Amino acid sequence: MAVNPADDRLPCGHYAGQLWDSLRQGTPDTHSRSCPHCQAALAEIRPVAEAVSQLAAEPVSPPADLAANVMNAIRARIHRNQRIQLPAPAGMRLDIREQAAAGILRAAADRIDGVRARSCRLIGVAANGTLAGVQLAISVRYGTPAGQRADAVRAAVRAAARSQLGLALDSINIDVTGIYDY
Image (cartoon, rainbow, N blue to C red; front, side, top):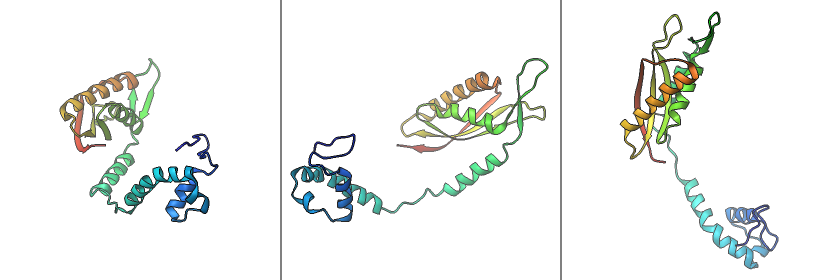
């Protein structure tokens, strides 16, 4: 099928999108039924359209723990309003909100290949605004050694805490909460 990718137009002037729509509606027009360009395009589009229809008809069930995971994320965000004091030049003060600091550390974990950071909670935030550590929940890709990924996450989070926040973390606790394969 020769299609101009700039405008989705077949050599006969019909658009591939029109053919797709006619397949979905089950009503190809007279031209499409007799045109060799349209017939060639339909032959390529038809299996995809059938697969899409089958997928669309399949029931979708959310994961059993979806509501609990959403509520945990909401609860974690509600309580992230405390400030952490960051190193600053003498005579100056630099604070960051817990939520922002956790976002930086979570992003560092999320950049590790084979890992999806699910949550990041700061632990041991003292009254003077210092931070002792973090608690991370991650998912790892199926077939990826969880221990190696956890070590890589610890290193990335420790480096981000030092370089982006100027903090040294006493502890980085990791909970592998899931496996994904896509």
